[in-house]
Length: 431
Image (cartoon, rainbow, N blue to C red; front, side, top):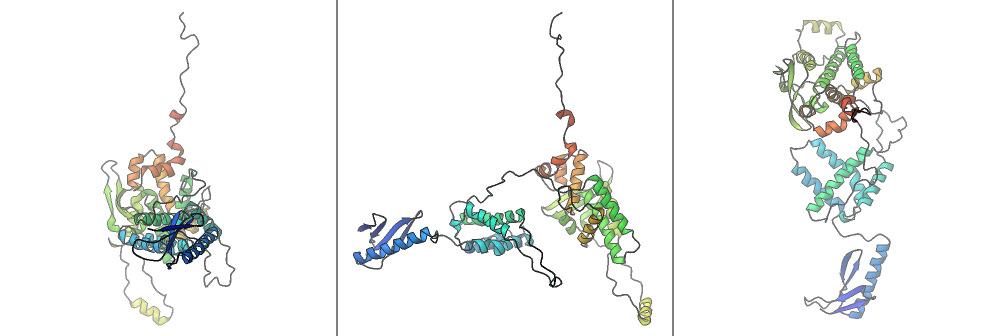
């Protein structure tokens, strides 16, 4: 194969062995061999074309316009989403899939869309973090708030950005499997790699006592309407139920009456609830404390709330309503939800009145805090960590990391304050 070099060997001209008379040029730039056909059989003309081509490439390289060849990020993200959605069908909730799709469409594509997959590295991922922090998402004003000034956008939360980086890493792993990328680049954060040991917001015993007393007092108010009283009674029993079972809020929302059975425990000889939980981790059993039985009995015997419609006002409507037979609301059926309503607004309202909306670290209390209270209280009472982890459908590592770390009773004082016995000065000397 005849070859010819120009520009001190930076560019080579050659002819292929396939019988073509045209000259081809090649060069090595930015770690990659690049080739082009000059489309001429004249060597002098091919040298001019090759020289112009090389100088153009070098100019693009210095200006940062020479992109590495590879799969465009947008195409790789679309292929990943199609593969991911088909692979985990039925194993993850639609909300989980929609969250990854929202990360890709709303944030990752607008930033990484101009790059190819091989160009993504740790530096570019850090640029993305800075971009997301400095350009938070601005919520659109609702119609009712059209006349009010739009609130200043808050910086994007660190956890939100890291969730988007997780989606990015999954795309890169998919590209490695497809051989579009040799290895997954390190896209971890360059700073604060060792985080502080924190705890999840939970209700201290005195805070929990104030909470359930406040929900109990609210449901007994005389100025409540029928549907408000039903909502208040449901909330009071929900607080007691979650704090004595350790269920997650989504697990309680999915709970049906057929999933709960009142049984007498063979070990403790107490009446407890055996619950078939279906939620975040799939199916899992749960055995409640004895204090959860009475709240559940009230839930089981409380009639379902049905809207009564507008109260009759005219004499004719009142007489017609009096002639109708009184309909007694049905009690919950086995397939009905145990907690069919949404009590978040009332829960937050009572937390604000009691003054325990935030814990001492400024973290907001939620329904999840009742699960944390249950776990912390069981640890304080000396429950076995392994059995507690099985009953709460979590791991021992999670309990030790997020719950036991701030329980004072988890420290054995006798082991910490152990003292070595002292010997008297003349004890080892013979008399």
